[in-house]
Amino acid sequence: FTASKTTTRSGARDAEFSMKKTIAAALLLFVSLFALCAQKALPRGYGGIRLGMTLDEVKERLKKNGEFGYHGERDVSLLPGENRVLIETDAKARGASSFLDRCYFQFYNGRLYIMIINVDRERMDHHSIFSALCKKYGTPTSLSPEKSEWKSDTVTMSLERPLAIKYVDTKVFDELNAASLVPLSAAEMTRELFLDSL
Image 1 (spheres, rainbow, N blue to C red):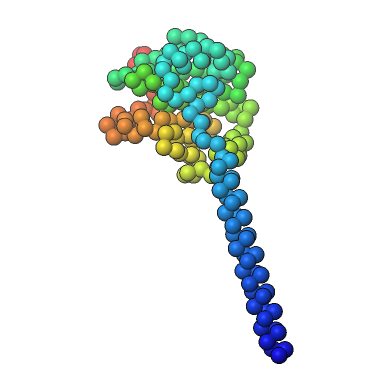
Image 2: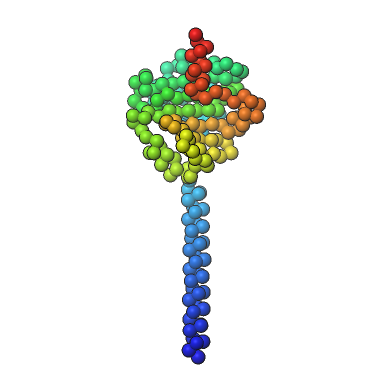
């Protein structure tokens, strides 16, 4: 009789433990799903400027946002190759009160498809930006010493060293890549522009 009572108690404890495990697993799943839903969709740009905007739309937004240090047509260049335009701004050099340094806006077929925001390293640090992006958008899709990357079907956002945030229209980039028309990096573009100006 005593053995039977002990077995019954043991079985009840096992069932109670199993039930608690199931409830804990369900709560963990709910919290994980909630956290995923709470994370924001990846942004398509910064400072009111979004991937997919026309050249004229971007110029107008840059004029209204002094953070970039845009000074009109002299910041606009036609790159070698078809349908490629680059706007390069330099907030730091032009005395704009901003966390930004040099910024690049690259267009293909009249639409913005790459935006590179170099952040002023005297005013901001990599860790603070990385932490803020992880908090808003979750764990990066890929991580390396050079860059952290978040990716969706439409946009790829990366935090690159030394301190730049890059937004790329994934679809346009993939199309250009497939056609072997992937453009030069911002540093290479600036180099090419300098060489062309000689």
